[in-house]
Image 1 (tube, rainbow, N blue to C red):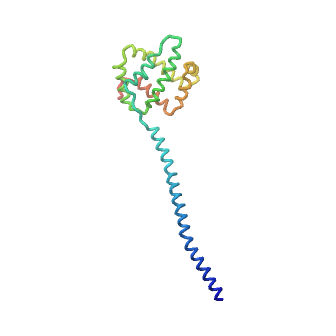
Image 2 (image 1 turned 120 degrees about the vertical axis):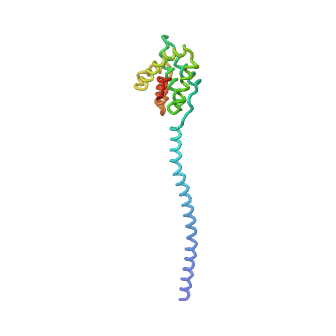
Length: 199
C-alpha cells in the first residue's frame, strides 16, 4: 500500500512538473505565433494603403506645364509644317495629329497649370511665331481637329490613313492610355480660346 501511494505521489509530482514546464513552452510558441500573425497582419494591412497611394499619386500627379519653346517646337510647328496640296499631305496630317496627341499626353495637359499653359501659348503665338508660322498653323489646325474628332468617334474611319502614315500602332497605344482624350481635349479647347479672357 505504501508503495502504491509512493508511486502515485511520484506520478503526480512528475505530471505537475510536466504540466508546469508545458505552460511556458506553449506560451512561448503562442507568443511566437502571435508575433508572426501580428507581423503578417501589419504587412497585409499596409499593402492596400501602398497600392491606393500609388494609384492616387499616378492620377493626381501634376506634370510640368509645357514652356513657350515646348509649345513652339512640339505643337505649333508640328501642325504648322503640314504641307498643303501635295500627294502626301493627308499622311503628314495624320502624323501631325498623332504627334500633337502625344504632346498632350506627354505633358498631361489636363493635369497641368491651365493658366500657365494659356500664358505660354499666347506668348508663343504673339512673341515667337512669325506671321507665316501663325498662318500655317491656322490653316492646318482645324484639319487636325477634324481628324482627331473622327479618330475618337470612329477609329476605323481613319485607320487606313494612320496605317499608311505608319502611325497606327502609336495612335492605338496612345488612345488606350488613361486620360489621353482628356489631355487632347484640354489642349484643343485652350488653343481654340487662346487669347480669350477666362472670365
